[in-house]
Length: 128
Image (cartoon, rainbow, N blue to C red):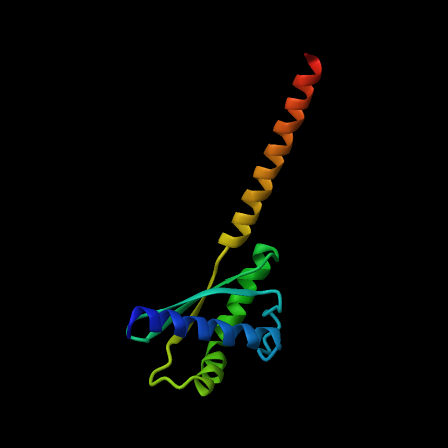
């Protein structure tokens, strides 16, 4: 399957999983509606797909939510396979992804440093 078609299939799977989470179709109590599906990487032979999950919840809750998604993977695969017309549906593996949260924290730290630098400049200009 071509690279573009794999990417498009990944986006379709991502959208369908997000809908299942937001509509609370996944009954596992560990799966929170605050979980976000960042991206889905589908293997070229359609055997596997890695689903990257993140949230601004504490790290323990995200790991717990990913475990809940992994235990409900069969239900999720069946639900999505009924909607998508592809010959072979990939086996889903859910992975905790902290990159968005880390990026947000990095921007927050940079903003703090910039504010501190501005404060030092003000103090320095008042002294002269």
